[in-house]
Length: 365
Image (tube, rainbow, N blue to C red; front, top):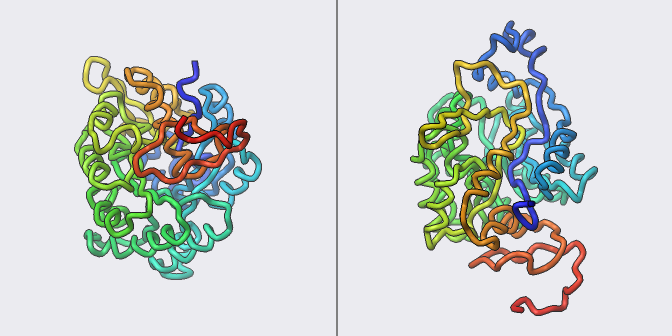
C-alpha cells in the first residue's frame, strides 16, 4: 500500500559524480584508497552527470510522486533545470549561487554575499526554480572562523531575495561525519538556533531546516535545537527524512510543531550509508564511517525512511502532510485535486491543482 496520497521527497540530488579519474589526476589516489575528506575536496572539480534514471526507478518502486531537486557541491542549476523541463510532472528544482562559488574557486572573482544573492535573484527571475538551497550561499575558500554576527550578515542578502520572490529558503543543519565540517563555510549547520534571528526578521519567508538537525550520526542534540526554533517560529519547518521513528514522536507531541511543520526529505543521491546497531537505540542511522571505503552503490534511503514513518501510529491526514502536503504548499506543487490535505495553521496558500473535478466546492466541506 502506498504510504500517502501525494508523496514528495523535498531533498533530492539527481546528479552524481564519477570520482575515480579525478582522484588519480588530482590527488594521486584511486577510489579504494580515497577517504571522504578526499571526496569532499574533489567534488567541486568534478563534472556531474545525470543520475535521473536511477531516481525515476526508485520513484516508481516506492510510489514517490514528485521530487524537489537540489544542487550541491559541484552540481549545477542548469542540469536540474533541464531535468525539470524533461519531467515537469515529476520534478521541481531549487537553486543556489553555484556560478559565483565556481568563479571564486577558479580565482576569477572574489566571493561576496551580494554577488551570490544577485545570482540567486537572476535564477529565480527565470521562473525555472521554486526556492533557494541547498543551504545558504557561502565562501568555500574562506579559512577564517565565522561567528554568528558575521555569518548572518552574509545570509541576509539571500533572505531578501527570497522575500522578493516569495519562495522558501533552506538552511543546512546536522553533521554527516565523513566530510570535514568547520565554522569557515557553513557554521550555521552546527548551530540551528541561529535560524531564530532570521525567522523573526523575515517572518514571511518560509525557512526549512534541512535534515532537521540530523544529517548523520546518532546524537539528538542538534535535533533538539531545530525543534526549539520550529516551535518558536511559524515560518520555520523541519526536514525529517533521516529521522528515526522516535524523533518524529517528539515533534508530533509538541503543540507548536505537529505534522504541519514536517517535510519528508531524505537527501536521496547523497553518499550516506547506514550503520546498523540492532540491539541499541537507534537500531540504524545514516552516517559516513570514516574508516570504511567510499560508497559505490546507490544507497536505498527511501526504503529505510518510509519504514520509520510506517511504524508511527498516527492518523493518515497527519502522515499525508508530512509525506507531501506541506511540501506541496510551500513549493506550490501541482496536486491532482483540491482538499487532499488537512489545512495547516498559518500555512501558505493551497497548492495549485493540475486536474480538479470539484474546484467550485467550498473548502470547508
